[in-house]
Image 1 (cartoon, helix red, strand yellow):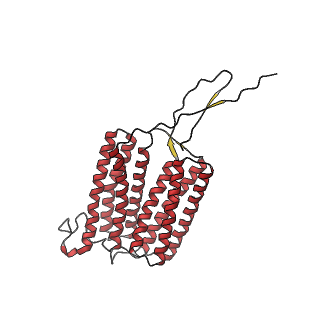
Image 2: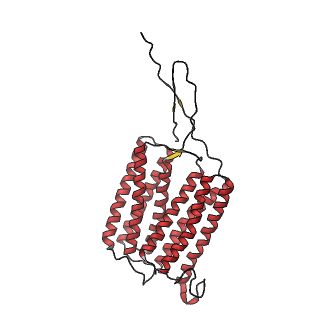
Image 3: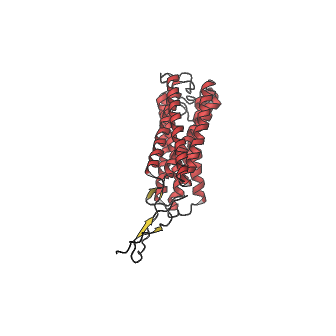
Length: 328
């Protein structure tokens, strides 16, 4: 009678390789990049909500004769010029982040810092085109969406700082990765439709600025429908990730995104039914920035550095199989 074949002996794979220690200055600059990019969204909103979008009627100068606002431009000129000055804060943070990342010696981090740095002059040019086109609503929308993308890049930098470089692998089943991808795509659909609604309504940035000519009520309803879809997908992700005991690195951003979506939806409904008061519109802008940040956090979290396989000599009469441990 043949001997039974022993079951394979399973040994856990080593945990994912730890990231090199993050210099305190680099970590602080990464946070500064995120805060500054969210801040520029808020100050840009203040420019629009106060009707100061053409407070400096040309670009790159404030007027044809001067880089700084003159007395006749009043408070609107001061607000718009102040927003332009914040670009130099972004430049300083971006340059410092790049230099410290370069010294840190991690090419992956340096590349992300380069993208953040290049985004600043790109946004300055887009902002200039926005002024030169008299606040064309489609250009204004593109300007805001690029800011949302830069917020996502800043989140990527923060997350990758604490992960080791090298190959990455998913930490949840492929179906969950697809669900998170759908959430991210829907998030960007919501952000885009938000800019369309904004371009069809008040708060154009200047009394004479054009609107996109679309019906605000119709597009607001479409925007709300997509928000409901986004909340439903995120809630499903939260429940499913909990059911399979997914790693905490994935559960945390899922919960954070759901919380931001609920708060953002509440602000959106209140502002719509109260006539779009400026304070609530500004708060809604910050909520949009946080939505971009948390959606990116969730997207990045579903992959982690791949552990290095360790070869183990099989014992006599058995075979060795390596399984992956999970990051909790």
